[in-house]
Every structure is written in C-alpha cells, then in structure tokens.
Length: 284
Ligand SMILES: NC(=O)c1ccc[n+]([C@@H]2O[C@H](COP(=O)([O-])OP(=O)(O)OC[C@H]3O[C@@H](n4cnc5c(N)ncnc54)[C@H](OP(=O)(O)O)[C@@H]3O)[C@@H](O)[C@H]2O)c1
Image (cartoon, rainbow, N blue to C red; front, top):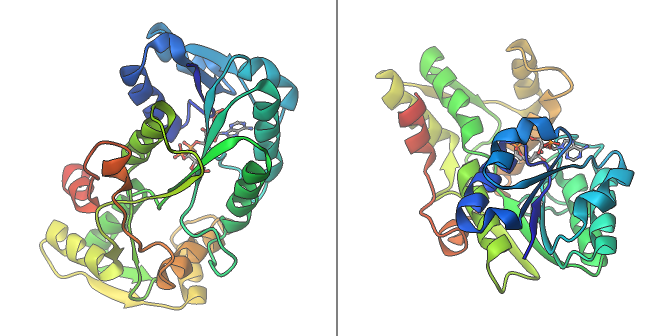
C-alpha cells in the first residue's frame, strides 16, 4: 500500500512523516511538498519525495500517481485555501486514491464563530461529495501554541482572555500525527469524524494556575470582551490582520466548541495524550 502526506515539510507534516516511516516500510511512503529539498533527510530514510503545490494543480497528477491513501493537511492560507483543497481532492479522485484523511477542526458548524470554520466545513463537504472514502481528523487547537500564553502570563502576572469559563482540549501536534498514522495504516476508519483532543479541557483559570506554578507568584485572569482582547493583541504586537482570527478562537472556546474530550489519541493513535501542563514544565 502506498501512503502519501501532503504538506509534508510543515510542522505537523514532518511529525506524521517521521512516525509513518517508523510504522511501515519506507518504500510505501510518498511525501508531497512544495519544496522537496526540505525533505532530503526523509528521502535518505527511504521515502519518495515529490513536488506538489495545490496552487499549481498541474503538479498533482504526477505527485499522486500510484497512491492508495492520502493525508490532506489543510494549508496555512486561512480564508484562501478552499480552491487548493478542492484541487487536491479532485486530483486524488482522478488518480485512483482510495481513502483521504483531512485535518479539520472540532464542530465546523455555522454556530461556531471560529474564523477557520468556513474553509474546513467546505473542504469536508467537498470530500464527502468526492466519492472517495474519507476520515475527518478534527484536531483541537495545538497545545504548543498555548505555551507562550502561559509563559507570558507567568512573566506579567496577568492572563488576558476572552474565553470566559470555556475550556479547550488542547492537543499536541505529535498526538495529532499519531492519530493520522493510525488512520492511514489501520482499518475501519472510513466515514469517521474524529475529535482529536488532549486529555482534558483547559480553561483560562487552569492556564493561570499553571502560570502561577511557573512564576512562583499569583497570576490573575483578566476577563475582557472580544473588542478589548483584539486591541490588546495588536498592542502586544500581533499583526492587525491576524488578531480577529485569534479573537474568534477565544469566542469559540467561550461557547464550548472546543471543550469536548475524547479518547481518540489513545484509541486510534495508540498513545496517551500529552497534557499542556507537561509541555509547560518541559519547555518553561
Ligand atoms: N489545530 C491548530 O491549532 C492549528 C494551528 C495552526 C494551523 N493549523 C492547521 O493545520 C495545518 C498544519 O499545521 P502546522 O503546524 O504543520 O502548520 P505549518 O507548519 O504552518 O505548515 C503549513 C502547511 O501548509 C502546507 N501548504 C501551504 N501552502 C500549500 C500549497 N499551496 N499546497 C500544498 N500545501 C501547502 C505546507 O506544506 P509544504 O510547505 O510542505 O508544501 C505545510 O504543510 C496548518 O496548515 C493549518 O491548516 C491548525
């Protein structure tokens, strides 16, 4: 069986590639990326590396030749990636790929204010309509991205948030990768929507408690509304175009859209999920 990973030089892509190369014969692994030179080390381990760019659909037929299963990693072009995702799905169907797993988000529904919902919901729909077998890997927010928040709060003594009492089941990229590998190498995952989560839902109060431990002094939660939060992000150096996306993630958490905890990492990925607390302790 031949298994392809798109976007294999990204942070998640590399982790999936690394775990996949350890799980199957490297001759079965095809790594797709816009820049094959960046994957020379993985080619040396026996993987086939091919050029593929969703923005250049003519690159896709050759890239997908002979592939049986594929992980479609959503690109980082938030708001402008649907066309590319559709091109990849279309090319996979034409190339005879049997099964595509796609990196989505929990609850990609209209009542979820997260700014990435439109792209993911439409890509999921394109995959359902494609005739391909599919698996939705609905990855929660990456735990790694919370480490800076906790460290900053530890340094300043304050944690500004628009998440209210809501929690998020932050999950590490390595745990997301393990689930992807479980799906790509296993059986019975067709037609499944997996919420890929960490071991618990973590609130802002929980993060402040972590920061308090890290700092050795009290860290207070400062609850603010979306507008104030956006202003604070920009004042702290977050690009103005990016701030609304972060605000929308907070609103999504506040509404409970990211708090469901599942056993998918353990059941499908075969490993215990890493807690945010462990990352902060290791990296902090
Ligand atoms: N759950 C979360 O908290 C969270 C956070 C951030 C992002 N995400 C999503 O999860 C994805 C993986 O996360 P990450 O941390 O690995 O992101 P990343 O390191 O920023 O990687 C970006 C990915 O997009 C791919 N890409 C960009 N343009 C492409 C194109 N034209 N054609 C094909 N692939 C393209 C890159 O592939 P190559 O460079 O190898 O071509 C790479 O895999 C992101 O792209 C984003 O959709 C999730």
